[in-house]
Amino acid sequence: MIRPFPESYAALVQRFERHLPSTLAILPDGLLRDAVAHVLLGGGKRFRPVLCLVAAGVDPFATPPAHEPAALHAAAALEWMHTYSLVHDDLPALDDDDWRRGRATLHRKYDEATAILAGDVLHAGALALATGAPCGDGQRADLCAILAGASVAMVQGQVLDTLPAAAPDTPGLGFVLATIDGKTGAMIQAALEMGACVAGTRAANWAAFGRVLGRLFQVSDDLLDVTGTLAVLGKTPGKDAASRKVNLVALLGVDGARDFLEACRDEARALSNDLPADPDLLRALADFVADRKS
Amino acid sequence: MIRPFPESYAALVQRFERHLPSTLAILPDGLLRDAVAHVLLGGGKRFRPVLCLVAAGVDPFATPPAHEPAALHAAAALEWMHTYSLVHDDLPALDDDDWRRGRATLHRKYDEATAILAGDVLHAGALALATGAPCGDGQRADLCAILAGASVAMVQGQVLDTLPAAAPDTPGLGFVLATIDGKTGAMIQAALEMGACVAGTRAANWAAFGRVLGRLFQVSDDLLDVTGTLAVLGKTPGKDAASRKVNLVALLGVDGARDFLEACRDEARALSNDLPADPDLLRALADFVADRKS
Image (cartoon, rainbow over all chains, first blue to last red; front, side, top):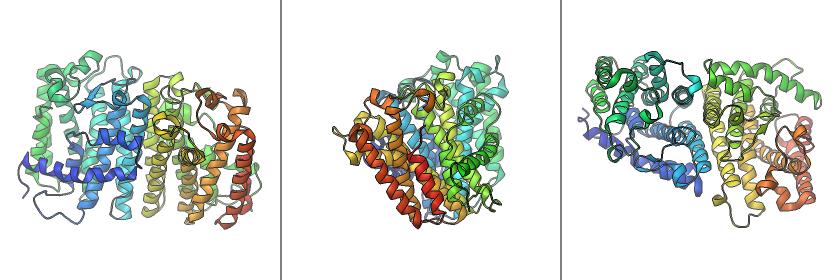
């Protein structure tokens, strides 16, 4: 029986962060590796790696399962991929953000060229790590297929979110949800599916649970954007309002967004009973996302 | 017996270009797909796809082998990957190029945000295509491993080529060759190895042949940069000299670079005898690269 949140979450983060630095070995010493280390080892919630480990059935307080090394590989691949997306999203031509995880963004610390290339090598390195997971050929191919497919979907969501030419004149809920399911949900789904892949417990409901978890994550992010502070968030609050991006708070209002959040939480709770994992843990994960303060 | 160059090269390009548009189906209709189509279907030498098909033993004038569909998948994955690298390299923060393949670069036709994201989706899409190749699980995993590893190496080469902080004060031949082997050689090696992978004819010498072919490609590129014109090249000549980038012509002079080219051609010819493919065709490929005018 896995102990309750947040104790088990912290223990999974700790286990993951013991593994993560070793993944830098796929790059030679030098500027590029330093830049990647700055952004990859600078903290963060490690949400996608934890999801992967949970879906893989890794209990941080029990004897590790035989597939734990493969799960850690997959978790690291997800964190490399997520980090690439942050580095590129923060670029001046996109969200133009100066702060991320409480540190200067890569293009502020180095320059734009370094940030573009570090993002590119994080993207490629993510797939290279997935191909090197210590598991069967079919699983390795599936890990890459899940991760590459999610990366395609993530960029599509980012396009809808960022490029005015890709958005309708009056974006409705359907458009906003398609944006969220791409830019946020795709990698969260991939985290669960990759964990289930190495554990041999793939099921269609992982995708549904991942999608609703992504929506929960995004609506709480949108709410934090209007209620949070730089000190707590580690990134600039109020950016969405300033850039007049369409998000759930802008569309539904604060109260409407809170209602949407509760509806997603209910949906996640319902789905948690039909998955090959501890339902209490899955519900705790949904609550963790819904109630987060940063 | 495969007919001699350039007839067989043109026939392989034609076969590849009949297949390539279908790969756009991994993206939904819209701005992103339009941008990708602009840059992917805008011509080009299709050099890496042709290498892949040659290493896979596809003879355009004979009955296609059973693995031809997998070879075309791998070839398309390579072209998506190569095209991503062109789009990002052309960005203002990197080479700042306005022309590519005789057309406006993506950030000139659209904007920087679109170019960054189109590059990202070409990168992800390349891996997604590789995972979808119609072949065995082991081959699919290997295709992804080769392609992702080459992408990591390509970015490393680009870093050495572009970021002054990554270069030594007085770059010698060793540094320049390491740069070339990354930014140009890695994907050429990958093309040969992916072709051999689907055909079941992997051999250590493919990597050595790919490396020397990459050096041949780059030295002829460097020579064209000082002797070519926009009309023939389809991109701006004299960029290297203007940006004071280190290249083989700057290091060795025009005559020294021509000597280096002939030494590479000799090495390629020698290696062509120890590979599981038609040696006449491999030698013709090396000559094609060495003697190209654009």
